[in-house]
Each structure stands twice: as C-alpha cells, then as structure tokens.
Image 1 (cartoon, rainbow, N blue to C red):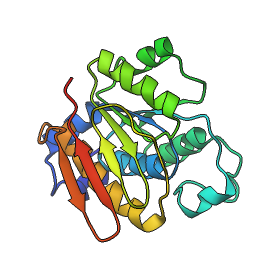
Image 2 (cartoon, helix red, strand yellow):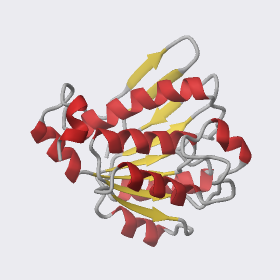
Image 3 (tube, one colour):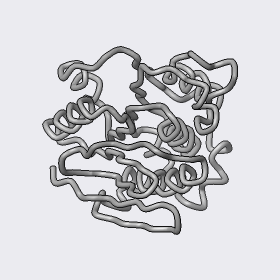
Image 4 (cartoon, rainbow, N blue to C red):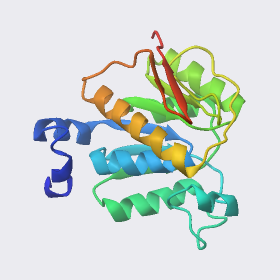
Length: 210
C-alpha cells in the first residue's frame, strides 16, 4: 500500500499518509488548474475526490489540460479526469458529477467533504458555492486567476474571474496550492492570509472567517 507513496514519505510519515487517505475533497472545475491539482493530490495520497464539471474538452485545452489529448476532444472533462485517475490509482474513490447544481444538490454533495476547491469561472456558480460552503462552515478555496493579478480566496465575496493561464505559471500555482492543501488536511497549517510572488505570477490567500 505504501510503496507507491514511499518517495513522498520524506514530506510526511505513514500515519499522516493514512490520514490523507481518509480525507475527502471536492474540486469544482476540471480544466487546466483543476485537473493538474487533482492528479497531484491523488499522487500525494488523497483517495476520496468529488469532481464537478459539465464542460467538455476543446482543442485549445490540449495545451494546458494534462488529461486532454486528440482522442478526448468533445469528451466531458470530469469523466476524462476520472478515467485517468482510476488508471493512476485504482483505490481512489472518485465521484464525477456532470449535472447542473442547485443549492440543495450542492449541500448533498458537500456533506462528507473536508475541503472545497473552486476553479470554475462562472460568477453565478461561484456565488452559490461561496454561500453554500459558508452556510455549512466548510473551508473553501476559490480561485481568481489572471495573467497579472492572481488570487486564491479563502474568504470574502467571490471576485470576477479572469482566466488567462499558461503551462508555466500553471505549474507554479499547482505546486503552491497542493502543498497548502496537504498541510491544511494534515493540520500543519491553517488557511490563513498568505502572499507569494515570483517574476510572472502572484498568489494571494485571504483568510475566511467561518
């Protein structure tokens, strides 16, 4: 069981790995950001994931979506992610949701989750997710991304979302965000205000009081 994760044990021990196996996260959006994040978290030990996305893979996604290929164009992103994750780890319990969301249905989906990550651009949906997670006292990471001003919100009202991302700053974002999520799930770090800059990309975390 642990052999597949032994290269990660320099970052956390076996008891912490068992804890990660029991944690459940929900990721809204399985595009360039969501798909890479899910792939990374599964390889770090997360084995319970719900994905929510009814969009399909387009030709332009081939440049940034790690699960997209010529054979998956027009396929549902969430389903493609599920198929690839099951190939990477058959133990992973991944629930792929492709239908529209209502407040009641979202509450049902989030009842057993430990953390919600929203990468979907639609402002109406972002507001629904924000209101629902706040009502349920669930931690939410809501991504607002653009080439010049990028924010990961764990709080306040959802911002207008601009998604301009390339493969290079995507890798930077994923590394930062994956570490933040794992540390939170292991109880090593709270979701507090945080800022990190490099020459091309800026990330800000804003604390959410729940």
